[in-house]
Image (cartoon, one colour):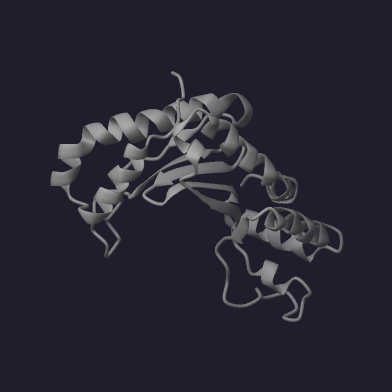
Length: 208
């Protein structure tokens, strides 16, 4: 399976899907999804596997059981590399890359807070965040409205203590290289630049 880039047809497909998120549209254009979205993303995942591990493509169907939004299809295609904690996604907005801990268990949240509070590990996190934000990445994650119980509200890293999950991401849009094999090298380059935050999380939070 050779990766030749993400075709413009993939972006056009999601642009149209956003306008008509229906089974009728999906059925009539499923071949476009398979050829221009799924196949290139599978090829990209395979091309990146040697360095980042196996990539898992998410299903294109939304789980609408507990959602007020009943539109049946996701308006993006994402691939998650669990071993490296990195993610890539294509949508009408183009390419999006991210990394970090986007879903955590209670034990992980506790370790995250202890590390943020630590006199050495906390400043190390601030340094890691400074490195990635300097390169144009944004920090995200689920946050509490207030500093969690047991921690000083005036803590020097109060904002970081509120995080339950912690991620780093960047919107790459649709650069000239997106539809070429160079896209693989560009995605890998962005993920490597995100490494300071991921390495800190791996060292101080770790798996559930």
